[in-house]
Length: 182
Ligand SMILES: Cc1cc2nc3c(=O)[nH]c(=O)nc-3n(C[C@H](O)[C@H](O)[C@H](O)COP(=O)(O)O)c2cc1C
Image (cartoon, rainbow, N blue to C red; front, side, top):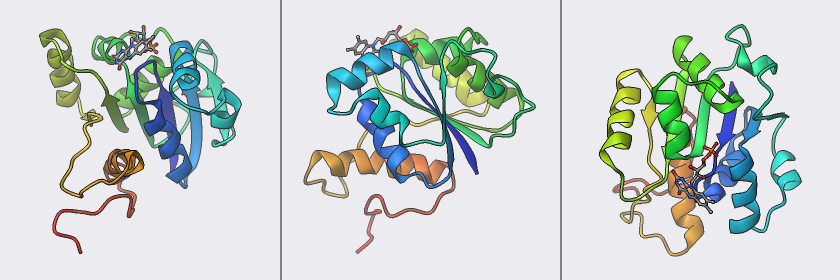
């Protein structure tokens, strides 16, 4: 499988880093400029550390990249974390950078689009945008960790969300203890 991972400027970039570490597929990475700043702010990773986790990286302003075209075969796009700004652009068909363009291509080609928004509370405009995207086949997978698996550390909460993303990609994983699993 070929998976495009977009990282945008929302809190929770650790989810993306963990996904890249645990995703054993061909990986393409695009980071927004705000995402790069938040990686420096919220984690101990450098941008090059994150880039080293993938097969190919593209700049978000590179609309001439192969990923910008539906003729390039990739199977799924995961935007994690997905800022509500990027989510809103996608909901309105705006493809003004490579992340939003790749999402638009993914939807028009009927491939899998997984968006992991992180914001709270959420206003009605953004809730409506999520409904619109969901109705168009996108999977809205909020960065909303559960507690039924009894997390003991932050990594357990991160693993839960990453496990849910892998589940949505139909990738078998043991990232979290499932309900009633011993
Ligand atoms: C430190 C920081 C944290 C932010 N956290 C969030 C967030 O959790 N969710 C969100 O939707 N936007 C958040 N924003 C706002 C977005 O970064 C902003 O809307 C930006 O334009 C998003 O651009 P991008 O989607 O191209 O990365 C944050 C901004 C900063 C500087």
